[in-house]
Image (tube, rainbow, N blue to C red; front, top):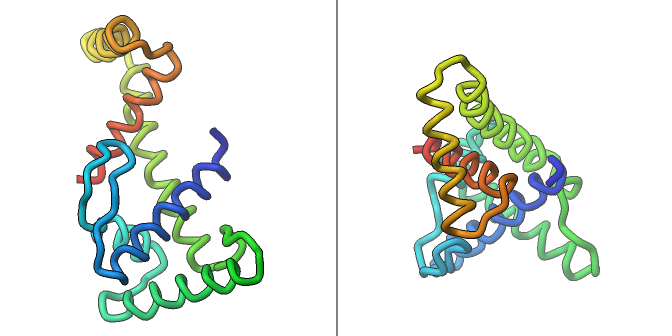
Length: 151
């Protein structure tokens, strides 16, 4: 997946979370399929990249939704180029996530045999027991590492 596609996916996630937050409703988690409250921590993590204050978050979110709805009404897609500030926030957020993923990858490239053995064992189990291919297993591990790094 390209960086641009990841950025667009992240923008879509941000929009879904913001809409749910503003409408005071739950959303379905795309991984677990469980209903949950909007992820305020995720929203703030993105917004803080562009210095949106706690007191300014509501008006920023409303502005984003207004622009997205305006694009929709005009038959246009709301993309990263539609909101420069949000584009900057999404890119900064993704770069930070990638840095965390690179730490896992670089730790796997170190000469520390124990770490490589553990990572290989998890990858093998994902392939053998859960039907992943090798690439997807590595991607899943990177994703989990990114999630854990956010906590």
